[in-house]
Amino acid sequence: MTEYRREMEQEGFSPEEFVERLAWRTVTSGGDFDPEVLHSTFSEAIGNLQIILENQRAKCNKLEGILGNEERNMKARMVLLLHRNGTATENLSVLEKKVLRER
Image (cartoon, rainbow, N blue to C red; front, side, top):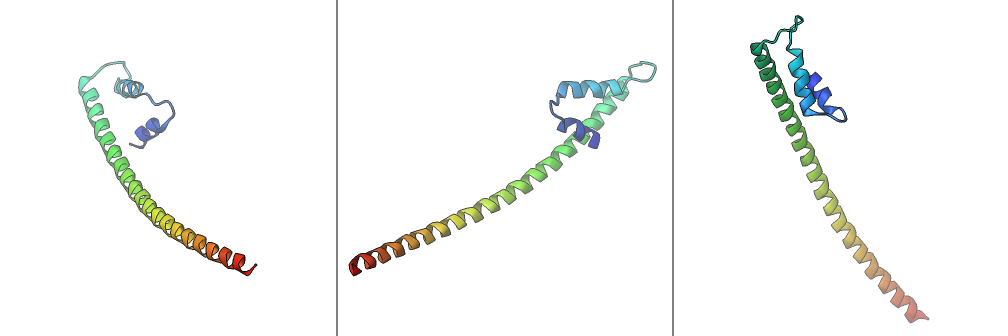
């Protein structure tokens, strides 16, 4: 299973070549073709790939959850900072008016 994952994570992965290599692995040392072995190999590979897919989906869901939490936290922080900025701007305006009156 990790072998499949390594193959798929390589740059320039080709599904057609992957299937072809998988088929060639089923050919016996004498060069004989056995359809039962081919079927068994492909069935096992499909099962392994489905497990890999489910693991990747679980990782994606977890990362999307983390990202959603971070996004909510950043939005809340931005609202707080905008509020503080507004307050600081108001305070600056009040101070400017006081300085102008004292002149």
